[in-house]
Image (tube, rainbow, N blue to C red; front, side, top):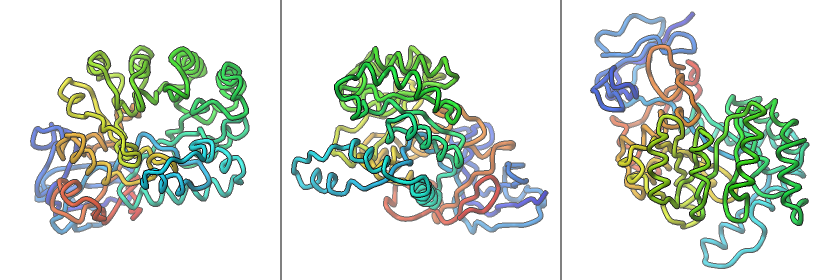
Length: 392
């Protein structure tokens, strides 16, 4: 098997304190990485690197783990430009939000949905993302939810059943009937393609009792819970996520002290995944990452890429927002966008640059990872390796 050495790295982020400077980032200066097939074989000082079949000169630039985007909605069709334009112009807009995307997605062919998914995956990869989760939730019929998951499962292991995104327009007068569908026939059709089950626990979507029923049914079908929690208002989502040992509570914008304490107590089980692209795109209140980190919660960053409330696939952009507006340090934000995302997906093989881990790396056109927040909006990712193969 061919080995590749990436050498002359100014700063290598390993996310393993034992390998580097003792910080959570495990930073090694003047470093090298050796890739063997799909995995990392060796990391350490460049002057001690073993011989390899090929050598790539990083030329004094930084290398980081590939980003782990643990929350996205990429199987969709249509466009919501008018909604965004109205919102940013201070005008009211009543086109129907998620329902607009549901109609377009239902009307799209499988080939159109897959082409759109692949376009967004390529866009994310060029910005350093090497692992991504994505959800259904824009079909809201048995057939449309199942095909969304089938399409997604062809391109990622991290697929989430989100039949409980909103109550389907077809069941507008019968929410209980829709919950029965989501926990019954739709779940049966979707579970073979998914690893996770999710629910939007929020006013106007699903209340705590409905969310509990959906997540419990999903878990009985072998799916692991995660929760859209406390995005728009205070509510039961975070407490429910912790109670059911969900892998993540996502958004976490409106938190009581009890919610923060619960996430801190469950730091080894339930990750608080923050999605600053949503707040940026809706001019909403920022999640308080500092409050969560100081309390001891595990925090991840993700894009929430979707056509309505966070149409960005850029993890570097989300890092810059987290540092500027959510009171995270550059080190914390990078950790949360890599190792934190891996924790939210309960993965140990990604989000790190350590021997035995998957060889997912991003080379920055900068001497330090801090430039991700220091130079917002600049396309700093100049090369990407995914499973040991140069992908960008």
